[in-house]
Amino acid sequence: MVAARFGCVAGRAMLVADSLTGYVDVEKFSGGKLPSDPMLCIERWSEIRDLAKSLASTNAAGLATLDFNQLDCPVPRPRQIFAIGVNYKAHAAEMNHGLPKEPLVFTKFPSSLNRPHGQIKLVGEKCDYEAELVAIIAKGGRNISVADAWSHVAGLCVGQDFSDRALQYTNTPPQFSLGKSRAGFTAIGPFITDAATLTTRNNLEMTCRVSGEVMQHTQTDDMIFEIPDIIAYLSSICELFPGDVIYTGTPSGVGAGRTPQRFLCQGDIVETTIQDLGTLRNTCI
Image (cartoon, rainbow, N blue to C red; front, side, top):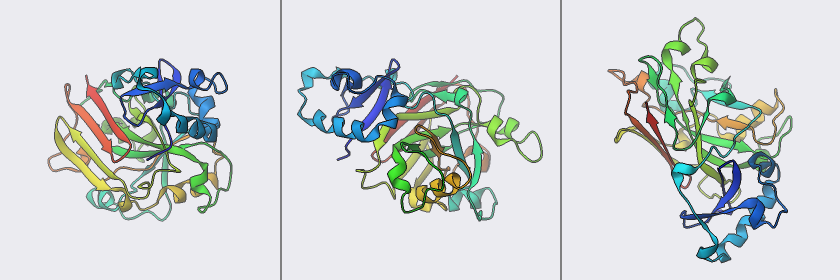
């Protein structure tokens, strides 16, 4: 059992009950000791984890009904969104890439953030899906060691890194950050699941379905660089801050890597599920 599942409804921080059917408002449930702003709560993650422990004894009548369609992005204003390219061995093979010596890093811009069940407005004919495990930083810093890296993580989320392949590969070399930052192309959620108490965090099952068809399916132990490696590498160059978002790479099965290629169409529903973390459900319009 994880200690905390933390999300956002109507711009306010919330904690989800183990039943996944109800939630409490963090500010109200804490008697005003913790703020309603999700970003400020992430900075105080140890207090959020402690508060969540008392949810188990809360009567169901004291919970608000959880409607997944009303969930907002649990990290609404991150300073930085990092993403790692070619970080699964099978994905490197399908894209005809060698294995990188160091993490291949690009950024996604915060203006592209989306809700867990948000719509995706397609642009052009080459929009792609990329299921990803996402880590959220609680405690920032520089030069974080691999051994200490997990202690800097608030929790893990499901992520979907939508990509405009035509824009991404317009130039040589490609422009990853712009191709992955159109409106709504950065879906995160449905909530942040506490990493410290998630016993499966080192090897999670991940599945992406497009309109019911399984497109991606893997265990995260196929990663080339694991989350502690990525945090250590990033922090050796950049300062990390509470609320920073790290997309950790996508497995094989992306549309651009298929024969024939399979890009998203209007009406497609992209469902991205990670074991113990939940499901994103994004509709293409």
